Length: 365
Image (tube, helix red, strand yellow):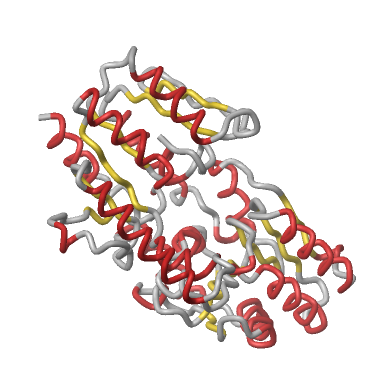
């Protein structure tokens, strides 16, 4: 169950839930979203509640009512806001609790909080105490990245299961690298200040001076209305509306058709506590789609075996622009194929999903 992700989230739905339903497991999938997408099938019972209509507390109460009619053996949560629900299910039904940790929340506090350093410190300590208290109800922990620490799970007796956000092979098998559109650049994901979207817009104004027919496609959702206004204002003031295609979030199944058509996949992240440890899922998706990589010189990305990437200093607009130009004009097809084959052979969900299946088998035995 989730309270902040799109129903078709690539990790929760396309990877974890579909892996379990493929083994004929019966799943009740709860989401809180304004999306109209319903994903029920023979094994998945998808129940969505409107985010516009219900608060998270109301959402939890609605799920609790549903649990009264289900035979609930495992509760799998993806956000800390659902701690109370998991505790309730543990106490009332004796359900096994899986805590799936997508982020290092301490880094998020230091990245997003506008408080001064003393209040951030207190907020961090409160978070650690809150999570440690919750962990007494948890049976297993899954982490999306080896850099996720939070309240130090191993010191509390847990051996977290690492399930990174690698792509599914099915999306890569039919990718046609020769179908790329000339001088095309793509970014997809969330739009927020920490991700350097405004910096990318500014970099594009430099790129088109050197490559006049260069184009940038952006797919995703804005984290705040204020940032949406900032991005649109930047596009307008720079006079580059004709070369920037700004699109809303689209279904995960559909993004691959766009990735296939673009030459350069750019990760414009700025340097902050979150991006210093977070591994961007789009790295693997760009590799699988045969895109030339443009990415910042941040530690998480350097952990992987990637060839031919054009690196830039995080937050440096001119350096980002130069890396994009270099990415368009100097492509080594051997490196592109090497990166794609690395996804097919190592960095893919299919060859790692057994960890999730084994976990569920263990908890249900």
